Image (cartoon, rainbow, N blue to C red):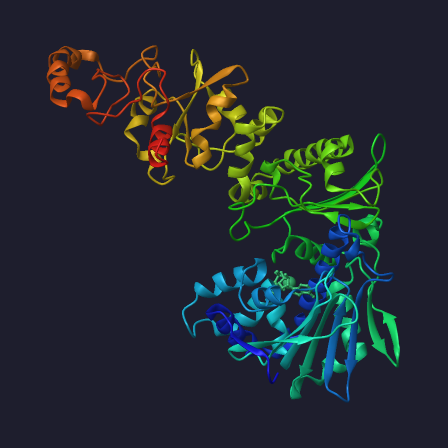
Length: 545
Ligand code: ADP
Ligand code: MG
């Protein structure tokens, strides 16, 4: 665009564009999925913004319009969404800041240049590359956008080769037009029927109307029924997976799909998913659940914390009849309706986990991905602590694979009072810890805990089925009641040695004692009496406390 301000793409965008442009033919159609998803997201956002700013109210019939123009070799995707200001155009379309695109970049970083080039197209299909997918089919892209609530419009323009320009533009209404100048070899994407089949395949579930201009008319292209409102029998596995990918911004297949309608004191429909793999950067920034709240099909918000933080891996939609459509943020915080939904949904997911836990192998996949998150709930959610302890899985000094607290209790030795556990950083070295020797020699099982959260929840849980949880590194681990494997003849010599060692170590330790906990090793570090567990002390020291 002559006369516009020129900006360089960030380095990652440049690299991504290079790949996207060289992707294989068969995967190119996903550009439409990406652009339509963005248009739908922007329309959702504007709807929510309008609740507190009437100037942003959506126009009648808001939706996504797809308009192919064969003569001009131009394909336009228009929306009535929230639009982008000049700064937002530069930031959102000039750098990689978000979800899919970012995850994709990280996946590529793991590959050496030139290696597995054949995998890349499928990688692109799986991840989605967001807006930049447009350059698979277009050699030039213009974005004309006007922010809702503003009169200014801007044009972003680029041939996807290193830079973009920004220049003032005009647009009658707020929203965004993505204008693709279709490549020589991509004619198919100027054909209305072909476009419609792509929308049906990838975007049928989108709740806003999507139309395609054909013979001078805008014809509806998506079913438009909110997927979760359809009777179970009418929804295909494929549709569910595509919907899951849309709401979660993940690209795998779900481990669990929960679809139900609740009636009674509150009425709602839920379609929820537990991901099949741990998403990139999962849970690092946000601890809040992102499950989407809809009221009578309309998207309201994804930050209503519909599920507790320790269920934040759950994705999907809850759609209720019991809130007004114009529900405000303040009202969301005050209404008892949300608390009731929250409880019902949480219990339903817990039930699902309980029944899926009977398939040990499949449950292990889930536990590997999200076990540490559930254990946060044992630590900070008194209401669900006991339920979660029952769902938790552990490594143990005597068992192969995963075990449960209940199974541990059933294996306890006669006279054993406590459930013993050992915490540490490294799951591979824990089984060889000298702390275990005395226990092993006496045939007492010890749970091996290696997630950071493991230093915190056992104290909070306190007991399980009436048995106390006790760290082996706490001095009071009373092994003496159980028969020691070797006789105590060495004790007398030890009595003479202890004062000398104590003198040598001085201030560095609070005491030096004889112990029955060791068999092969000579010495072991131990936490003082009732003091905090050793691993907890290490963690606290590391965080400067
Ligand atoms: P993602 O959708 O994963 O965030 P994209 O590359 O698809 O990544 O889009 C980048 C960003 O550009 C979006 O997060 C959004 O802020 C902005 N954007 C893209 N398309 C539109 C649109 N049609 N209307 C408003 N904003 C948009
Ligand atoms: Mg996107």
